[in-house]
Image 1: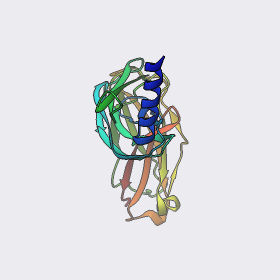
Image 2 (image 1 turned 180 degrees about the vertical axis):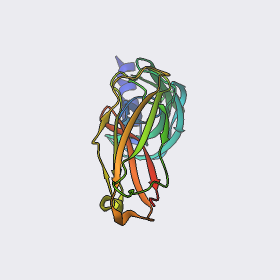
Image 3 (image 1 turned 45 degrees about the horizontal axis):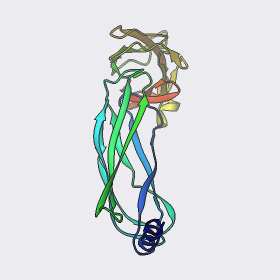
Length: 247
C-alpha cells in the first residue's frame, strides 16, 4: 500500500512539474477519397499535466499505401495545461492510379516528451480509408480554331467534339460536360446544348460528345473563349479553354 501511495505521490508531483501528452485522436479529411485527391491528416494531443508544453512535439508520416507524401512532418511547440490541442496538419495525395474499393493507409508516429520512466516516448497511429471511383481520363478536343461566321445565305453552325477515355477503371456514373462562353464571349457566341451526360464508359473505351454553337456578327476577328468543364459525381474535375478567332 505504501508503494502505491509513494507512486501516486511521485506521479502527482511529476504532473505538476512537467507536461505529459498523449495522442487523443487522429483522422483523415478530404472532399473526395479517390485517385489524385489531396487528403489532410488530422490529430489531437491531450496534456494531462497541470503545466503547459513549451517545446517541440514532432508528428510525422512513416508509411503510406496507395498515397504519396505532400507534407510528411510538422512540429507542435505549445499545448495548454490540462487541455486538448490540435496537431499541425499533414498532407498526402491519393495515387492517381488508385481504384474504387482499394484501401489507402497512412501510418505515422508522434514524438512526445517523456514521463517518469522514459526521457521521450513515441505513439503510433494508423488510418485507413476505402477509396471511391477514380475519374482520371484522357481528353481530346477537336474544333476549328478559325471558323467562318456565315456564308451568303446562312449562318454557319460549328462544333466542338470532346473525346473522353477512362484511364484506370470503368466510370459507371459517367461524366457531365458543359461548354460556357467566358467574359465578353457571352455576347458573341451561342452554345446550343446545355450540359451533356456521357453515360457509363468502360476503361479504355472512347466516348465522343459534341457541342454546337453559332457566332453573332460582332464576333468577327475577335478572340472568343469558351470553357469546357468536366464534372464527376457533382464535382468539377477538369477545365479546358476552347479559344477561336472567327472570320
